[in-house]
Picture 1 (cartoon, rainbow, N blue to C red):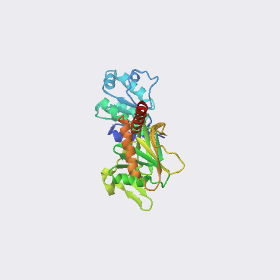
Picture 2: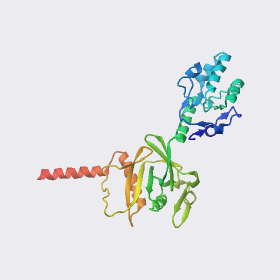
Picture 3: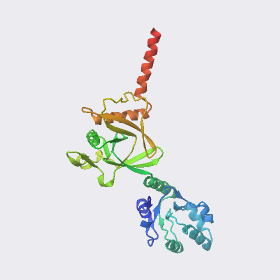
Picture 4: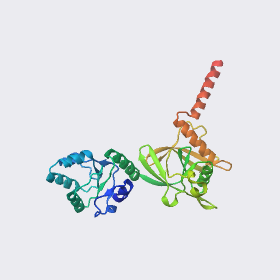
Length: 311
């Protein structure tokens, strides 16, 4: 089941558990949005987002406390009668014994935090969005080059790890080698991380496994990085026509998100690390509004027009 266990959520958000009798490891959160029950506390449960974490803040708590005792418990019972992941009470609010009894019977965890409601909501949504984002694992290397996340792809043995090692020696940072775990945070943002088991390790054929963090220091590694550019290493083919100007961008799709992709032919004598650096810098420059290929094209056109006028 794709989701975050309530236990994991509680640990990450530093929440107090008021219902230790409920096994939170067997309850899962599958939606990144959270819900502040409003109309539900009046008894209206049509279109109730029961799959979300339910948050009781100042407004909800004040409303419930002003209800007659029996009606208050009835509202809590109606809320807890749905198969919700959990209830979180903000601002150090605590449920009374009757509410805890109902929650225990229903098997619904009730948690607490001293955080303000708005602060908790933003932190919870940010965490759950990252954990529940669509994800995929691909073969490649992810390196932070001048702040640009560069995903280096290509067939096994073509030189991805060697290029990454040289980039590390030049002061850039390794995110992951061999396997890149990619999460789609939104329509335009992909974030790459490393599997825990291979984090900070790099494999070089003929040498073996290297611990980049130990050899080069903590400044040579990074836990996660947005993916801004993809570079696909390919074996050089003499008969193939490669793009030499770059007037039009080429793209690759990952999780239905387009990423600018450069196909780099490999042949003896080409310094892959320098090429990757240049590609990252050029990509950043384009994002800042300057395109060298278009500038050259503009100069050529102006030169042709000038030559015709002189004739």
